[in-house]
Image (cartoon, rainbow, N blue to C red; front, side):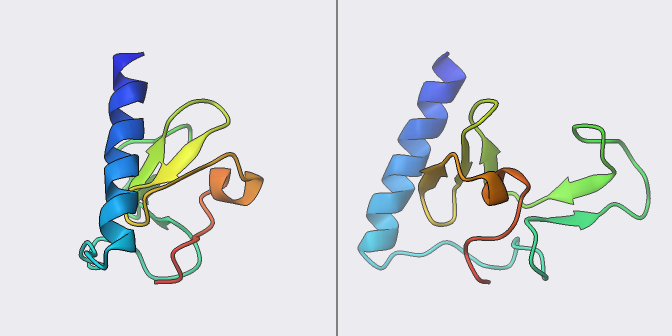
Length: 88
């Protein structure tokens, strides 16, 4: 519960900074249309898949996810499948 609250606070403050024009680095955002890249070295599975997720992608609960780059919390099904919403 405390972890979820902390994630909400971080995403909310990121949203405020983003609206003020203060942006985070886009370097950690993977290329392509998804918030992950395929782990070709097969180090360890994440949620049953061999991927390396974007460092800004946050899973808050089963149906709620967030983007720490944009400061958005959403229950959008496409974002749950880690489709990008940041267009970077």
